Image 1 (cartoon, one colour):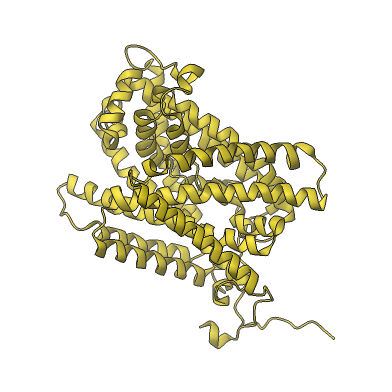
Image 2 (cartoon, one colour; image 1 turned 30 degrees about the vertical axis):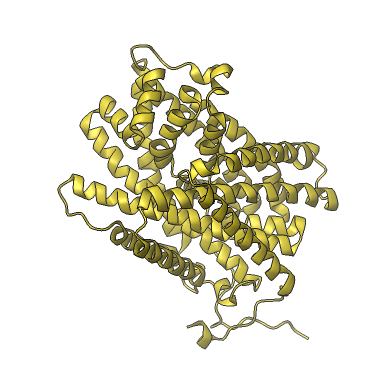
Amino acid sequence: MAAPTESAHAPATRLSGTLGVGAIVFMVVAAAAPLTVIAGTIPLGVGAGNGAAFPATFVLCAVVLLLFAVGFCAMSPHVPDAGAFFTYVRHGLGRPLGMGAAFLALATYTAVQLAVYGYIGAAIDELVTSYGGPSVPWWVWTIAVIAVVAVLGYRHIELSSRVLGVLLIAEIAIVVVLDVVVVLAGGSPEGLSTAAFDPGQIFSGAVGIAIMFAIASFIGFEATAVFRDEARDPQRTIPRATYLALVIIGVFYAVSSWAIVSAWGDEAAVAEAGANPGTFLVSTATNWLGPVGGHIVTILLVTSLFAAILAFHNVAARYWYALGGHRAVPAACGRTHQSHGSPHVASLTQTGISLLFIVVFAVAGLDPVAQVFAWMAGTATLGVLVLMVMTCLAVLVFFARSGVDRRVWNTRIAPLLGLLGLLGCLVLTLGNFPTLIGGSTALAVGIGAVLVLVTLAGVAVGITRREGTPPVVTRETAL
């Protein structure tokens, strides 16, 4: 008997696209929000972490994540589905834990998107008022941004990649200009900083806090595998994009933070970052590039936040899409748009959830930076570390059980070293978690409990709901 054919009018269930290495790198580097990290994380790492040696912390974290990426990329050809963490853990540790990872990933990427939504609302308001415009509640700007992201997320992925590419080039360019000017001038009167090359200074001060902030700065690089269905040649594109994104992010952070410390001098940088973390980058740019440079940085900080939101929206939407295909959430989320080839239902679902949370935060009167951003960014940092630990375990178990790849470094040694490094980062993050979210131990325990419950809910779905095949949907139900 002939196999049934899909109706010409039935909704598609596969994502489509011809994304190359460059396009995927743009999206995941944009998710890392490099200018936002330079403006927000570096002052915290320098002022509250290991001081002028903080740039070296980015190198240490990049090495750990590169070890993670070796196993991640080795397993990529054997995991043919979109869904990144979810599909890796499902193949290595089984469907229940895979579903637990999927639910945790959804919570994690939603949290980081909400964090940036809060930040961008405050940043736009500050930008507008600084040029004499009216001051409006932060959530008004945030809802406007949600509307723009909803439109871009609904359309074909290549539209988002082009928007992100333009924004990313702009934000990286201004920081590179600042780096070059500082380095060519020889830094502050005391010269270029050498603290980052001194092991004694690297491991001094609150190095645990420094590592925690540094590892949080890389969130998003692992999303390369989420776009495998939309990649031109997944087996080559995904590994290359993963390594390239990590190297670009790591080098950019390390060099730029070193240049900014050098612009002030070691002691002055620590003092300024501790006293005025919110204006640390803008002050540096103004001092070295003039008032125009300071204005450009302020404007590009907003576009950097927007790029991060759009990138994380696309990642979260593809988790909804993957779960819809596996019937862990309504099957409609597993549909794709007939014209755009996008996970349009999943995208609208993520938009609706984001809008709901923003309304709740606004009604509750939460501060967009001190509370919304700090709480949600901390939640995302903890969640992504747990997910990477689970993925490392899945890689080790998968190759040990299947034997499909005999390369010892790629399938045994590197994943194990990556696992040990990530466990160390997780322990440090747990120990300093109250600091990461603003100092409340009770809130830290509450956030941890929510993440555990979300993961257990996913495990329960994996146990109780059969995977099956997504049902055939008629044209009428697709409309």
